[in-house]
Image (cartoon, rainbow, N blue to C red; front, side):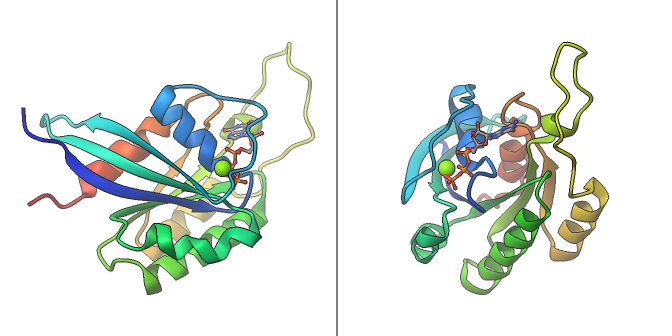
Length: 182
Ligand code: GTP
Ligand code: MG
């Protein structure tokens, strides 16, 4: 079969929204409840085979969301062909931060960059089993509000749970389908 097409992808978003957890789910199909914050950035790779047998090799830069690392981000999104901008559906402020990352990408990154918006942690707002303790965590970002913003800004849109594995592979395969291949 054909040689894999390499795609440089960057993850951006507020601290603790689950960027590293999404990557860990996509690359190793694992989840950790106590994932430590990323320092600087982490690099991982994962291949993805599409229906037409085209193989994409993602070279993933998982950046640190803490404010003190913001100035490093251009090093990682420069030359990126794709970006996943992540927010937490239980934190409205994290969508505001995501919007500011999208603006920065649209001004400073490669003009052909494929950007996906991912609302993570949907497991926290789904109906729980009777056996689970009732939480006082509620959805702060309605799906339709985020979807409307994504449409207006020209982004792919997804909701995900890195914890349950919902929607995660889909984010990467939909991006892969959008990458122009010569
Ligand atoms: P920084 O590296 O500091 O920018 O954070 P991050 O965006 O990489 O977040 P990380 O993946 O470290 O996750 C932060 C916390 O949220 C961890 O305790 C995770 O276990 C938890 N978490 C991540 N994704 C999910 C999810 O889908 N559902 C739930 N319930 N918790 C999640
Ligand atoms: Mg991280």
